[in-house]
Length: 491
Image (cartoon, rainbow, N blue to C red; front, side, top):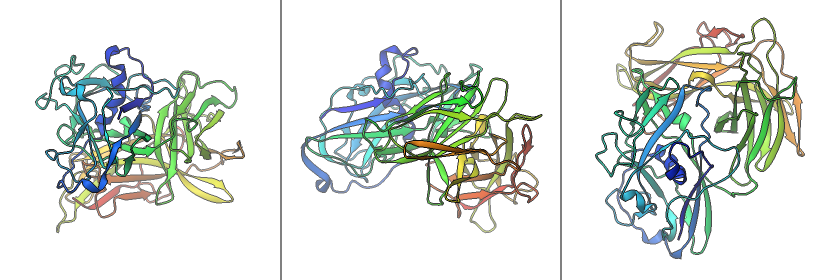
């Protein structure tokens, strides 16, 4: 079987000799601890060989000017697969998918420029793979001390190890690993490769959601992975964000686009996110066949004027949305609003003690999705927001924090206006004007341990109040403090 790893086409300007390996590298962010016994492989093995075509999407949305990152370098030393969900490192049956990495690790830039077309590129050599249901695919990173595998031909991280981030100011910082150097996560449970069958699998790696900044200023890689079986043709969602008054692209600004779906709580959460190009164009592809998404677009132009979020409800894959109008905020103050708050964590011990966790914090607005039904929709954070935080210290705790707790601050830069909402129906979009008056928000925090597992007695918490217990409302150019989110019963 041929094991083919495919990805959005990226510019090879930094590493032209490994442009094809770009797809493989994005797997690197997904590795976390995995353990268990070997178990039996017989029941999941078939006869003959099949072909799995794996695509990886990673449209980074936190690169400058939407964030402070310029590059994210990771170094890959192995990719392998196993049919047993409980297989350990030393169990037999592991299949090496890219044998070339056994001789030389490869370093790539996850933030290399991506095309807005759905051009996929093949990676690695053709490798025979027995038919079966593959429960684990592990990608192993080279440790920052280089001690667990062959070194790459070149290293852009200098003296900061072999995995690093480069900020917009040019400074290089080591990207600490959360067990990725030695272990893997079973990231593809239930993917079946039948004899003679071609399987298309897309893995979306969100680099922006995977980088956590510690309280001491250090950066850590905590993988965020979403696999789905796809059809590589006619599944993408594309469009162009334009100024509603001029019909032209947002001048010299930044435009973020999110694909969202409802979670178990009924709220929209971000599945994929990308930055539009200079013309306002974006394209998410491939996407799961038959899936429907909500599209949320936010922008700030070069003069610092924020735009209302534009939300489009019920967009099926394979849709070209065309021009999406964004309405510029007007009035004396036209800048975005800033939400600055704290997340705290304590253990379930008696008395409680400080707990360490990771938290992803997002801002939500309520929109009318048709028929009078309302839904909370995530509004992407813009600029120098810090939605991914590590709660590991008590040095920044506010006076309101519980006793014996760890704390961390977050910042979300958001539109200071209500969204414009369009409902997709019959191939057309009918937009409603943004509601006037107060601009209410909710803030949601999701807690997890360093391996990405939900943590604390109540791992998801949402507040719609400010620090004084009043409704959480924002105004242009101003900062508001949401009510503190306190996680309890954490590990």
